[in-house]
Image (cartoon, rainbow, N blue to C red):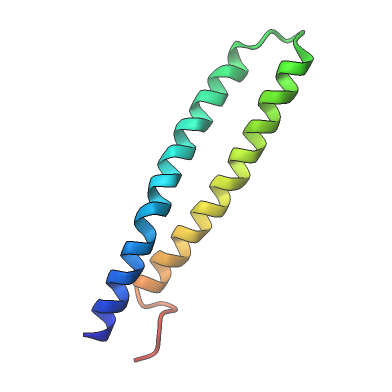
Length: 82
């Protein structure tokens, strides 16, 4: 019973993080399209988009690590010892 309660809490914690992951993927797609549409001579625009892409990729990695940790804990491979 305690494991189910723990699992429900982990699932509840993962839901908003998963929503953020979906949002970040959409932002990455948008930024990638902006990058592809940039004029190669637009150094300032390229720097701005590249910086935003880098930030989103780093955030995506962080979010994916959080979700992987929650999944590992929820599967019992690192969760509380009962």
